[in-house]
Amino acid sequence: MASSRTSTHTSLACEFCQSHHRSLFGSLTESELKNVDAGKTCTKYKKGQVLFHEGTRPLGVFCVSRGRIKVYRLGIDGKEQIIKISASGDLLGYKALLSDQHYNLSAEALDDCVVCFVPKEDFLELLKPGGKFYTDILKAVCEENGVMASKMTEMAQRSVRQRAALSLLMLKDTYGIEHELEGEIEINLTREDLANIVGTATESLIRLLNEFKKENLIETQGRKIRILDPKGLLLASKR
Image (cartoon, rainbow, N blue to C red; front, side, top):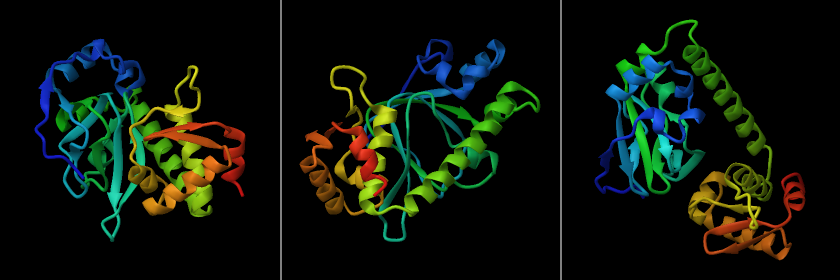
């Protein structure tokens, strides 16, 4: 459930942001970056706080400096369907802004985050036809739409068990820890969140995780999940 706790503003220059090089803003010139800095606001969000709600009109774009954001829509039954999890460097809300439409998704902090907001006028000022930022935005829109279509097709053709296995592998590839606990998924997801990614009931997801544990494919400790047998889990995602 979304939190109503008050967020706090902070100061963060783009050039000193650790996620700057991973962001679409990384292609901006020095003068363009200064203009963004002058107009943006950076905010600390607590876990559960909402950046924007589905159905509201965008007033600008959000760039994740630190933390993770779940992007989701509500089904007709009021259940969340998590579309993606955004991390540092990701830009949110630009497609709705460019198409002059209301948000068709909501965004909520999965953990404590720092997110910068760039007003609509400042963002649109950067979109000079033929410029690198303009080209990068077009590529990002096309790539995101392609990935989304591919994911929806792939998930629709799989059983719940297959989707659960595939989702764990995708989370590992994106958020896996590369050290002695390789395979551990470093993300603060509740079982309900994970079920909403898979597209199933929480009870079904818990049952599947227990099955994977009995098959020595994964191990769990609280919310933490560690993949023990990636090849076995990949097979489970296909049969």
